[in-house]
Length: 412
Ligand SMILES: Cc1ncc(COP(=O)(O)O)c(C=O)c1O
Image 1 (cartoon, protein in one colour):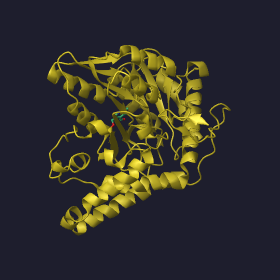
Image 2: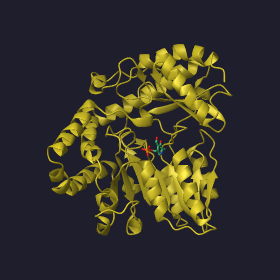
Image 3: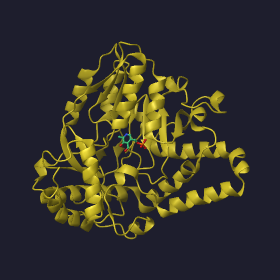
């Protein structure tokens, strides 16, 4: 029985290869479910996901329906369809369907939450140094508006769960910290944080917590209700195969009446969640097609998908790390064996800033026809490798063969 961050005991997964050193067996036919360019090794599912063809078709059927009669689609039953979809997605995540809202993405949800929190000049929003850049920018802008402070707590890369919790606990200032924002799976450092324990530590001081779980839906099992966070947001357009523009924001009962949508629409008087979900004339087809993404996950077998992806990401990390001269002890731990994204540290001085990381990512893409993510964190550059059902072990082998030469020729 593995204990999943997020609190629920997950089913035992057979993550072959994580310790044995062998890549997992591929999932037959899985690559054919996607329309990815066959000439590219797509090892960066984590950034923007990839939408299965069946989900693309489901969305296109909805668009065809709209264009057959736009007024009918938007005025007869659209809200019911949104509510029905929300129930489906919230149930998958263990979130209360009446206390959750469909929302285009995590970025939007973070601004919405920040806007709903009251801040005085001496107050602060607490973040970690592993947080997503745009989330930190939103917190800083929100704080500036009321003369408050966005403060960052530093967490060493690869820190054990106990150290993460105790550093965050020590950074909380009960009378001043009005919101703690913490990632469940970090972006730049591909680490899982023990959010259940972090939420419990903050709750002891009545400090509200926003969990940025952008990468969680589809990658880890989660029981959002049981986590007890005040706010939790996850993207379904990354690992749950939904069309881009699909996320779910879950809000604890005490906050629901205080949530004000960023844009006032005809559903304003309905209150949360419909006031947040309905935002005028928009394309709602990503949400309505999202259940087909979950159907795809379940058809492939969600346990099989997670075990495959975690084992393949670990394999990729190991072979690419070995090619760069890094042994297992030099590869950052993810904090969770089920993660489908892993980091490989780059030599010191390489891609140490975000612009340099972007430049190197583009160079790898152009020269090797491999899509990866390159992140800069703590003055160090990292290659972030994702694994998804459409990937094969030989894609990581090929990257391992060619990357060292490319990096040694890379002068900046
Ligand atoms: C941890 C984290 N938070 C927030 C985001 C922003 O997500 P979106 O672009 O869907 O708003 C991302 C995107 O990768 C992320 O990794």
